[in-house]
Amino acid sequence: MTKFEEKKFEIPALKGISAKTIEEHLKLYAGYVKNANSILENTPEYSQWSEKDPFVPYWTSELRRRFSFEYNGMRNHETYFSSFEGGPKPLDEKSALRSAIEKDCGPFDDFLAKFKSLAATTRGIGWAVLWYDRKMKLLLVSWIDEQHYGLLNDCTMVIGLDMWEHSYVADYAPSGKKQYIEDFFANLNWEVINKRFKDAQ
Ligand SMILES: [Fe+2]
Image (cartoon, rainbow, N blue to C red; front, side, top):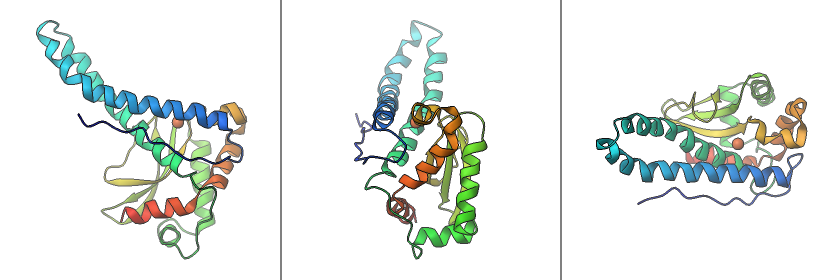
């Protein structure tokens, strides 16, 4: 059976975000991969037990519902961790992504300020996201609750900022959320992000 692969990331020393936080965070990522695989692999077999137990269809349905949490938890984190690989690099002013941001989201600094505000002020756990709508060829900014509520169909995640507390509380304390957001952007390799955007065209 085809399985999802747990990817490995080469993450350099980061500003503000400790190696220990990344290590623990990668364990959570591994859990999403494992659980996504486990649901795919086991649900068909569980379904066969319905002849013995009338409740089986209900809890296998719940596993199917849970699948989107595990699957998107896996994919969201792959975007997050890969954005740090190669170390911080600025976004070239002539890059395709820079032009698209200025076309769809206004001046670059305004876009950054609005994105950071979304991340800082949205209550609850989730993700601040820059999307690329492939059908409309349009950049969009929105929020995902948990890992999966609020995903936009047919859009590619270009930037995914994990705002679950496990991402920053050990290094910043809850009151340090805004500094975590600043450091996330300071650590970004915009060349990776620009390539992700171009690959989605
Ligand atoms: Fe996370």
